Length: 95
Image 1 (cartoon, rainbow, N blue to C red):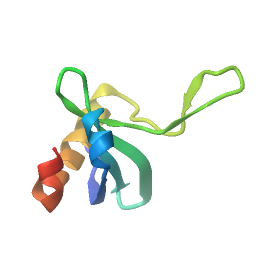
Image 2 (image 1 turned 180 degrees about the vertical axis):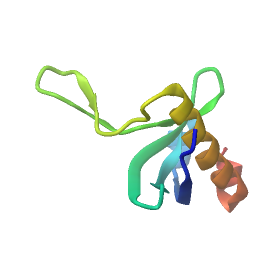
Image 3 (image 1 turned 90 degrees about the vertical axis):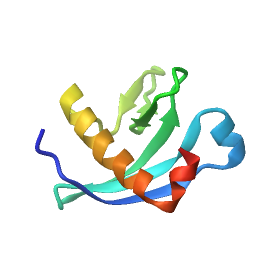
């Protein structure tokens, strides 16, 4: 997948949130032309670190994504680049 992620910015969550799996918030640029924000970094129940893309609830109570990767491959490419950038940063201790 030829997605280029750059300018990754991470804001750690509070210690209370970290206890419940929310590690922080991330924003990043995709392809040099689109800024993505409102993405959360979470630890899953299985212990895996993953990204969760923003969504909002519609009038019927259903969640509607505001943005999301178009495929599993795109998600994997974005997650790999974002998590790699975070792990190189001083915030790696949160992960």
